[in-house]
Length: 219
Figure 1 (cartoon, rainbow, N blue to C red):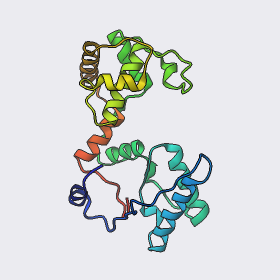
Figure 2 (figure 1 turned 90 degrees about the vertical axis):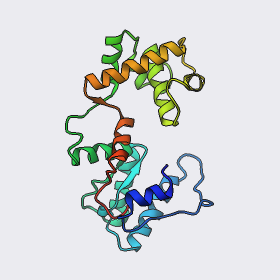
Figure 3 (figure 1 turned 180 degrees about the vertical axis):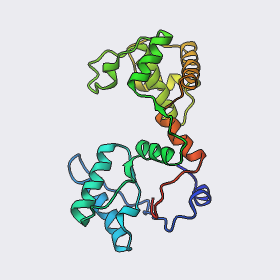
Figure 4 (figure 1 turned 120 degrees about the vertical axis):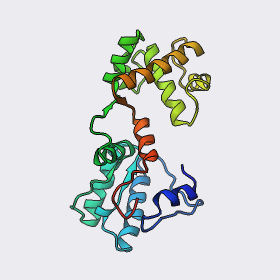
């Protein structure tokens, strides 16, 4: 999260900034309508203020949630125009990079690229573990090292210095030490550069560094 001053400096040309009181929260069990309420309240406020929802960017954690926002806009507010800037954080970053001609040759790292890297550097990797949330698929060393790296970066921690913290969080059934973690991260950075690859986290950082934002009035 950026500080308010940095936000204003970077995105001050946006017409409005919406704030919610910190003592307001939507709490409930799964299926009780938290997302529905959030969608309806926020979009209703925007419509009441005279905004076209096609001139609004909505960033979510997942593509499915973005789809839900778009479906709600169509059902509740009869919006059938382009909602190009409704999407997950990663998909919006990809659109921004392509739009500004800085992502035309992007090769985003997915499980296939992870597998290629692990094969090249002799890390055991199980691609099935990338899709199995039930923990029934065997997690190999490559899977565990990628999970630890991503967890550290997403938590604003150092992938090498804070590897023990990540290991305790993930609890993989493989043995890891600092030397292995350090070499893995060094190899991966080198491999990304050699293969013109970019991770989802790299995309977000690139958008922030280049101050890229959607061409909308409300973000």
